[in-house]
Structure formats: C-alpha cells, structure tokens
Image (tube, rainbow over all chains, first blue to last red):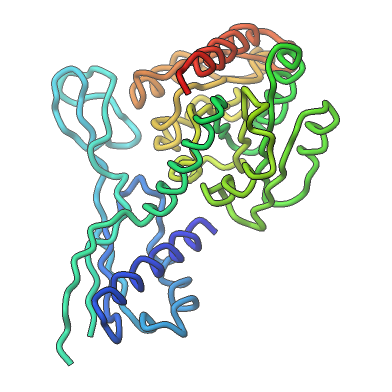
Length: 113
Length: 224
C-alpha cells in the first residue's frame, strides 16, 4: 500500500507537468529513488499500469535510477557506503554519521509527445 | 510527433510535505505540542499514550489521533478516559499521511489542546517518509524485538527525535544488548534522546513524563 500512494503522487505530478506543457501523451517518466526510501520499483510499475489506464500517461515507461546509500562521518568527513549494516566509519572507526544520499524520491523529468 | 523532455525535479512526496506544513501552521497557531508516535505493531504505542494520559490529564489538556489499518479498539480506550480522540482507518494503508491528519484536525478542539498524540500505523518501513505536521517524532522500540532493529530499519531510527525503549521488565528473559542497540542508534542519529521504560511496571516513565511536560511548556511559552 505504501507504493500505491507513491504511485498516485507520481501520476498526479506527471499529469500536472504534462498539462502545463500542453502535451497529448506521456511516453516516459524518469524517477530517482534512493535505497533508503523504501520504494519498490516493481510495485510502483504494477500499480501504475492500473491507475494510469484512462489518462494520457497510459502505457508510459517508468525509468528508475537507484541512488545508493552514502553517509558522512561526523569526525573525519569521509563519505562511505555502509556495508552489512555496519554504519561506523571504515577510516577512523568513529560512530556518528549524516545520511548524504539514499533518501531520494523525486521525478527528474517526463518525456511527452 | 516529436518527443519533448520536460524537466521536473520535484519531490514525489512534495504534496504531502506541503499539507504537513499547513497542519503545522494550524497546530502552531493554537500552540499544540504535537508528537508523531511510530513503532512496529505491539511495541507499546497505545500503552504509552494511555499511561501518559493517566499521569498528565489533570495538568495538561490532551487529544489523540489514532491511526490503524482497521478497527477502533485503541480509540475506544482513549475515549474511556474522557480525552477527545479521532480514529483514522487507513483501510490497508501502511502509514498515516498529512491529508488524513488534516481531516482529523478539523474534528478536534485544538484551541483547548496543549498536547496532541498522533499514533501512527504500526510499521517500521515507511511512516518516517511522511511528515504529518508534528513537532517531534517519538519512536517506541521494545526489547523483545531485539537489539538489531536499528540496523535493519535505519531510516526510521535516523529520523526520530526520541526513542522510548519499552518492556525493560522483560530484560532478564532476553538477549537484548543495550550497548549494541545504543551504539547503532547513536551512530545513525547522534542527537536522539533515549528513555528506558516499562509501561507495565512504570519504571523509567517519570523521565519521559517530565521531558514531555517540559516540551509542552516550551511550546505554550512561544509567542503565537
């Protein structure tokens, strides 16, 4: 159900942008999704096919670019990707990080005719 | 027909963020300190709310928004204490969003409320991605769930302001290692405040009550 509400938001936003551009058809929607966003692409595609049926986005391809998780060490500023659930810094072994990437969930662009 | 690319660059949950901001403004106007309570099912959200109401009801005016997939059992317990409550049923939805809270706010006497509890749907995966208009996020984690939960659900633990680690009375029967739990949590979220509590025995609850009362007071003292 989480993906359902996300898919609704994707469709609403894409239709709004396409209407603003006086487009007749949306052929592709380009999305950027972080690993930590909890969004499952297959689920979004599944719902999208249903809810876009009677709209100008029907049949549009969804393209997902996945952003890996990266974090910055509070102490030495090293940016790294946590491995196997270990969030401590591989360089200075300090704990305490800020999440830099991985939370993204946005629409980069749409392709229209 | 030629294909044209239209740049969007907008957050997919932008509309939710927008509504959350409107909710926050509404709550700020009446200086209602609002907490969004998140946890897995059965960690003790309703028990914490009920204990807190019982302790503070003579001093603080409270209201509750209950989010559940179905049923109104939690809302009935709150109502029995004479506290205004609105039940939201998400009909299968796994989190509350700002729109649902917006409608619920219309049914509550905000002018006569100092503290609003929003009990989110029990889930460790996505409620953190949906702002509701709250002042603070409170996570309840319970010892029987294990000390590895922050490792498995990092985004939830990274996005909270306070963690109530509940069911400490069960510690003798569990392999829960508090040092491991605390280390993982502080690594993800160095500003988090952790309270060890047992809703069952009342142990540790005083520290939580006084933190909460302090925050409610701070919001009351803010210029409207």
